[in-house]
Amino acid sequence: FSRWAYLSATRVLANSEGLREQLLDYWQLPLTQVLTQPNAYDFTHMDQQANSVKPKANTRTVLLTVGRIDTDKGHADLLRAL
Image (tube, rainbow, N blue to C red):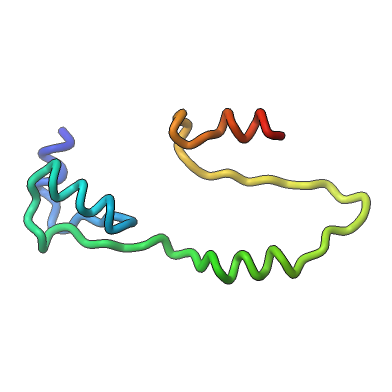
């Protein structure tokens, strides 16, 4: 099914140049079919914002992690660290 989906798509978006190269190599897709669309987050700005915020006393800490539940994503490592 994956092969059919990739080959029938007009465009395939990869979120990094490395993933784009993997898609081109593995699925043998035409160069013009696979485009790189980086994540739409400005991590530099996020870092600046995080460094400028000072937590208030007696407040709860909230942690958000996003990613598929897979050992590669390191959720178990995060839980162990916490």
